[in-house]
Length: 102
Image (tube, rainbow, N blue to C red; front, side, top):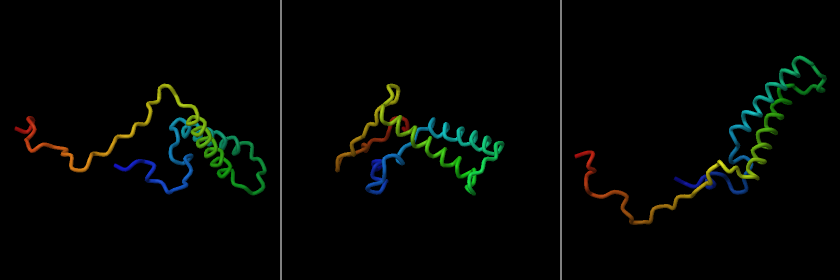
């Protein structure tokens, strides 16, 4: 399996590579709450749809909180470990049949 960084184009911002699940949930809850408030209050947004405002709020919270969380690692979060690729010519299996299949 290729390294996760190899899947992204060169120069692609690290911000979009990984977001935290709790940051997505926070953004969604804030977006729904903001849409309900905007629906009830009915402010004049100058022709801008209230849904667009709440989506922008959702995105700012999601990516902003994820970026803040990435800047200070959590003690409970395991470190990312890279597994070395197998050496060319190294045998993965033996010619013997596993004992469970005998």
